[in-house]
Length: 237
View 1 (cartoon, helix red, strand yellow):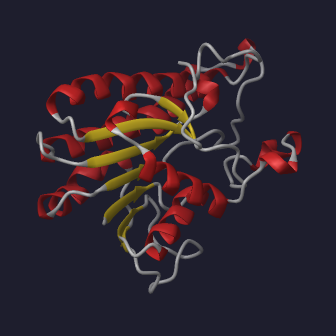
View 2: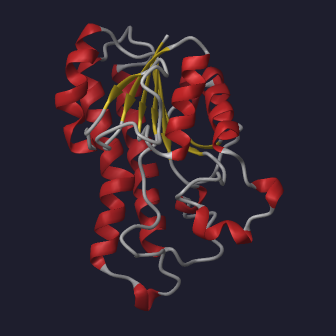
């Protein structure tokens, strides 16, 4: 099988690359970083596409997609905190700049990838696309408030996945695209917030990669457009 992992330099992305290589799959690992130092070794078995931010997915991935389509795509890009900016706890902390940063990283990057993939699909195409999202992007499930920019960006992502799935269901019935909450994972993204997470609910990156790989194998066309937990159960929008 051919597998594409974007955001491959992050904790979950790198673990997915390793997992998929161990499964014997042909893995294309896409990263915005300029080297694999600290991410992977040169002989890890994956084909690394470095220095490739989401805005350049088309230029970098298009030649490979013309050769053959992936069976599975894991999109692992996203931010929760960066450049000293943490999630807002109150409305007074909100800034348009932080929201735009979150929208770009957490929503537009995924839409860019879907646009790059779309021209290569037809009615016979079979592909599963797992886009990492977050439960806090659920409007109905929001009982705590706060984290304004992150919540809004993930809600936008969830809507994008739902909307694209409706269009693709008519045009590409064999393509499944879902938004997935991977669970709290021990990574740079979650590190500042782990003190409030029970040890039993904090998964290693390798465990999350195992779970997401298993979920990919279980997905069917009926799941397309859903917001799912890593175990396949549905999260309300």
